[in-house]
View (spheres, rainbow over the protein chains, first blue to last red):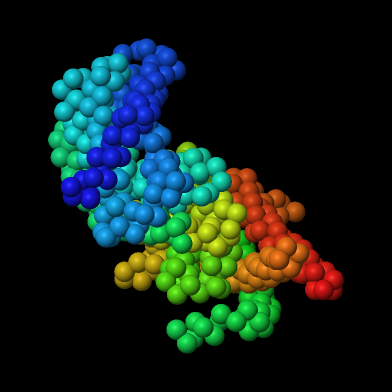
Length: 221
Length: 245
Length: 53
């Protein structure tokens, strides 16, 4: 089988089989969103106003949970060094692992988002835009996150460090992701924000694997 | 590369540092004294902002230095990654805390300027947000640099982060042009020359010169401290190697 | 005297102006002092190590 697809299949299977990555990410996503009506009060208008932003912030944090282990387990058992010696560029290996991470976390988050939108009293006609924005934005999160995941290999307290490194870089995705939802909620066209999200995804796709491969390589040297 | 190699010899660098440092100190203190005199006494209050415009003479140089230090950090990191230049790692590590201090000062003085002028300590516009991200990048760099038992690993990992984070620098610089914000656009470094009266321009430039000379002054001290720390580490490694053959 | 008071008042913006200058001075001095202390400590440790050898 194509080695690229082999890596993707293996990582997705691991994410589902261990029941941790996908399930934990989704559980965290739901719990984080549910905290908001309890925290700010169940006033429907308030919830509708902040719903898009809350879902996005929760998705951002949830997609970070599984990042720490993106390379960590392979790094610890030595599998990463074998992958680095594989007859394909490390960038492609990284890309395969990022794709697997997105399939196991980003995609489920986008699919689950409308349910949480209901809890947040978001108008249902905004759901398609919310899902589209998440589908365009979460790949960027996975690609940027892979850089951070490579950098913290072998570091002390890697998980907290990863959040500190990666969350500031997630901010542009959050800004335009939320603005797409807000535009749609106000009855305006969310096209500009969605295009920018797409452009950021393409830029991250072009540059992210190189930076992440450099990060992984310095950990293996 | 010949020229870069010349700096790789720590003894030679230390000689150079000792020669340059008094000059940097002198320029920093003189320019600061002159800049403070012009800024606080000899320059007129702004016709719109009144006396509060004097905050500009610390705010704008601090903001310039925040960007300048990050650029220096990224350049040093690139040199360290590409040519494995030993001094570049030390320079990058020594730059980061100073840059973080300048970024914090830019945010703080901006906040103190914004309260009387805009009526608020903070707005979530593109300029302020991107400078806040810059501060987080500095903090992330410092944390990552110190997170490894082997300092060489920390240097390499944080160098990659410094280069990735460099995308934020043009965003900070051009955020006032790309988005409508409360923050006023650049009035000095802009096409068509500075749009600022020379009575305000002189203290601004003097303070900028003072901050830059201060940066060189402190950076040289910090690099010397890093070189000494490296020697101590090497001596300890040798000692433990001798003890357990 | 009233001139001096007027100078410190900064047209009503005194608190903001002086706080800006004060904190800037304080932080720059602190960064410098921390750097010098680190250098002195390292150089002393290095000198002790070399004396012992």
